[in-house]
Every structure is written in structure tokens, then in C-alpha cells.
Length: 391
Image 1 (tube, rainbow, N blue to C red):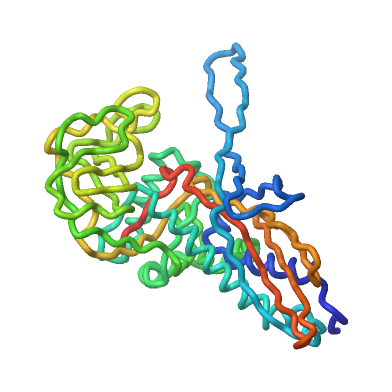
Image 2 (image 1 turned 30 degrees about the vertical axis):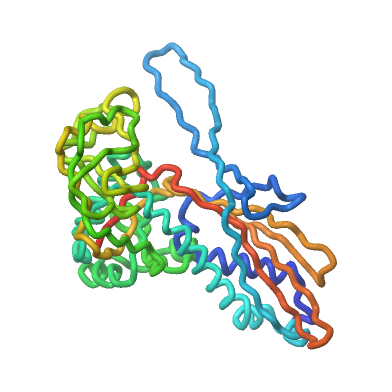
């Protein structure tokens, strides 16, 4: 039986439900709803607080060793406000909710979700760990298992919060190669997540064609210009580059090895870094170099003339599929200002996503312009808990 009139709450709740379903990447990372703007409303540039997971130390022996639990948070700036607008007539508000959702809400939320996802998944640019062969789409499970190894070495929790995002091309290749790997699961009914493929190798797999594609600069090889880099440094003087490394390029420094985060014993592979800014003579990178102390992440500091080599070929683009733990990234939404003197307006939040709908009647046309807005920010808070799968 059709509704006599769809209410703002019904429309807003349905819009949130559909948006939540379509957020393939955002729906799998750390989401935090901050209600500090619930009364007065927020705007672009507002600060949102995101809680970080509590951490504890383990003590030996029978004697109790108590510790204070300090809840830490990072501050995210809501730099982005996006909206999708539509116009419908008063007669169309008498539709059944399912019909109205199909005709208006679903396509509107698909467009909004795509824009939000495209923004958020660009956090891949901040991830410095990478596996795979540039230019080759993985046809075996090995690169994905190598990504799992990277997460294990970064001490990511071995729980059900690990995910992989692959584009359609990579998904087709791996599913075809391992057609018994993915199958229907009861989890599909539980998650209601668009693009969900199944769970295998310790990951929930998702298909997502909004992923980050990285393009290397016109040069990818140079050398350290001196040996002055010190513990705590995040810049490196270089030479031999005819063009600057591209922001987002993953590179290694010859002879600088990765270490186990707890034991500090060196691995056999070189530490990977990601470019955050660069010229032909200076590279700024992440993570910061630490060759000693509790934060040690390399076995030694760079030597003079050590080769600096970016992954892949010059001026070439590579798809960046992504393996990650939920806590590698954070996405936060805030409450937008509620306008006055409009036909109707509503704000709702669900599972860390806040959405505002505003409608205004146009007496001249008997139409109702409506806009759906979201205010958000995002940040790679623990990029070591993620790994690119370059193809």
C-alpha cells in the first residue's frame, strides 16, 4: 500500500541506508562520528576528533603492575563538503518508499558514494609498503600473501578487520585463476556491502574501481648526496635525478634494511618509503628515519652515494590495489548546520556517517528542489597497517 506522503525522516533514513551500503572502502575503515557540532552544526574547516585504539603493555611475574589507560585521539579537519541535488514534484512524494528509493535515492546515493570513495581511497598515496610487480596483474595469491606478511610484520591485529580492495581487472584475474577461492558466504547477508567478494587468506575481499592509480615522475633513479641523514630525519639530499620523484612514489635506499618493530632485528629486505614532496635535489618522505631507540625502523642510516630507486618505470601509471587493517585509515563525518525557513530539513547519523537533507518548495513550478549533504574528513592514521599491491 502506497504512503500518503513520504516524511523527511523516512527519506533521510533511506538515503543513509543506501549510502552506507555503497561505501565499499569507507565502510571498512575506522569511522568516527563526532557530535560536538550536533547543536550548532559544523562547516568545512571544522575539527573532528577521532579516537585511536588503546594500547597496553604486558608485565612479568605475580606482582601486579598497573598502568594508566590514556585514550588518544587525532584531530581531523573536515575539509570536504559534498552534496547531490534533485528535484521532484509533490505528486512523487506519494510514491511507495521502495519506488521513491529506486527512482531518486539510489542513483543519488550512488553518485555521492562514488565521489566520497574516490576522495578517501586516495589515502593509498600515503601508504609506503608495496608488493607486486609493476605492470603485471597478479594471477596467483602470492602477492596478496606477501601483503599479508607486510601487515603481520607491522604488527597489525590478526582479526577479521583486514580487507583487500581490488579493481575489476585484478578481481577478474584472481577469481579466474582461483575459482574455488571465493564462494557465497553468510557474511554477505550480514555486511550488505556493495562489491563484497568473499573472505580468504585472512582478508575480506572487495571489488572497487575507484582505487588510486599512481603515475611515476619522469625519473625514478638517483642517489644519496651525502651521509648527513640522522635519526628523526624525514628529508634526504639527493643527486642524479633529472626530474623530481612524484608524490606518492614508493622508493628504497640501497643498504637501508627494514627491522622487526619489537625485536629491532633486521630483515633481509630494504625499508620502503613514500615521497610526500620532492625536487631534483631534496626528497621529503614518510616514515621518518629511526636507526635506534624504541621507534627504530631501519637497521642503519643512508650512506653517501647509496642508490635511491622508486618502484616501477618512469612516466608510467600503475593500479594500486590495497590490503589494509581497519585501523590504518580513519574517516569522520560531522553534523552540518541546520537551515531555517525551509520546507523541511533533517540530519541523521548511522554507523559513523552523518547526512543532512534539506528540501524547499517552489510554488511557481510545484516542484521541490532537494539536496543531500555530507561533511567529512579522512586521514591515514597508521599507514604501516596497509600495503599496496601494485599491478
